[in-house]
Structures are given as structure tokens and as C-alpha cells.
Length: 249
Image (cartoon, rainbow, N blue to C red):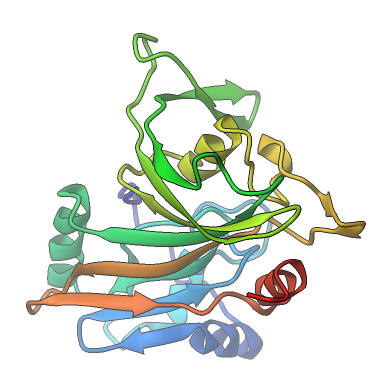
């Protein structure tokens, strides 16, 4: 989902540690784009409290003119992985149109429980609706004729199957809020660590540290032509959990 346009805020004041931290996330850069591997726990935009969001951390890359990279899309706070920014207004316009035109291909990986879905590879096309409860917003599955129904489509493939969990590859064909999380929960295979949608918080007697969802790759048309594919390595905690759950994989 593309971020909503909003009035520019004054430049965020960043510490040397924050600047070094966000620069360490960069996995690709050229004259037009900047791509980062966002860690889990960092809000893309509109975070609560005093902690800087990724959008604010983009001031670490600001030019003397005051221009800074702009987010082209977002990831949930607890989702890690590839996130694309544009370094120029023309690039932002081009990529924004490509995103709206569904020319982006997003690939995620998630650990779900209990075990692999049935069938192990398939498509989920259950409509979703937004449900607001106080200051919190959730997504719910619903019937197609519900007045608030939004179409949603997710492709999934089981990569590794274990006794108590499975590693899935996911490709959303729509960009609804929390789509992957709700769709997987709807087939009885919620993402582990997802307290909001019923994911297991303990697995094999050990706590799950967080939502185990990672944006592993992003394929998109580059502003100067051709198609670019960027991959991001999963965080260390997710790699370690994968090795523990699937030791022979």
C-alpha cells in the first residue's frame, strides 16, 4: 500500500547512532533509489511515542537542498525486510504509478504453526474488511457481499515442513493491511509470534520472540528501465529459529 501524501515535517534531529543504524540497513543504492532491509520493531511511518520511524530516519540521507528519500510502500512495524525508497521526485512518481499499477512483485517468508497448510501450495482469495476497535485497527475475513468487503489474494507455497511448524513463501497480489497475517490465520495456520491474529507465542517449549514474517524480495520496474529484483536476508533471530525448527533442511 502506498503511503498517503502529507505535509512535510521539519527535519528530524538524529543522533550519530541513529544515522549509523539506518545507514547499516542499506542493501542497494543508485542515483534514483535507495533500498533497505528494515528490522522488525521499526515503524515505517506514523509510529507512536518518541522513537523515530523509518520515514524520519530518511533524514540521514538528506541532500544539502533538503531533499531526502521518500518511502514508496510500507511494511508493518513487526515485519522485517525489503523496503523501497525514491531519491528523486521523478523516481517517486514513476515508482508510485508502478505500484498502483500492480507492477511490483513482493515475496515474503513466514513461519506458521501447526505444520504446513492443506494443501501445501495454494491460493487464498477470502475478502477482508477493516474493523476498528478504539485506537486499534484489525482486518477480518468476511463474505464478498459485505458492504465493507475488499478483495484480497495471496499465493502461498510450503518451502519446509516440520513437526510443529512450516516455512512458507508468500506472494500477495493485493495490498490490504495485515493481509498475509489474516489470510494465513483464516486457514488455520497463523504466523507464529502474531498475538493479534492468534499466532503461537510458544513453540516446542520455547518462546517465539516476535512476528515471524519477512519481506524477502521485491521485484519492480526501475525508473531508468528494466526490472530490478532486490533480496534481503532474514534477521538473525528468524534464521536461528528456522534452523532450530527445521534442522535437516
